[in-house]
Length: 84
Image (cartoon, rainbow, N blue to C red; front, side, top):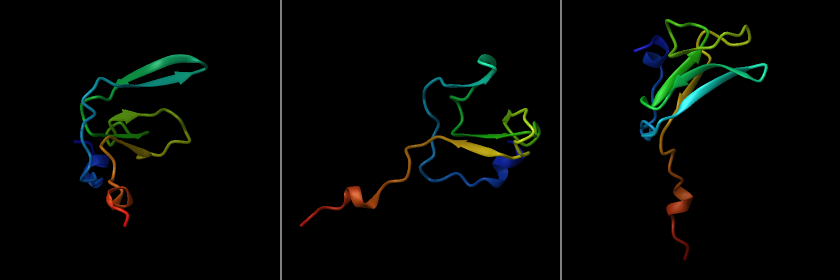
């Protein structure tokens, strides 16, 4: 488990996508990398390869830049309430 994921608390609604997905990285309209992202429920992105699942090579990206989270999403309480 990567360090960034150890500090991240996944929401209760998280789950793996159940399908085959890939994150495609383009530079100058040419695909330069492909990362399979269909197995885990979340992926850490950033400059640090030791901390993150997907390393992003750009000076504007921090060591632990973002989490890509899959899941059903939070349930809205207003959609389940009935009107009188």
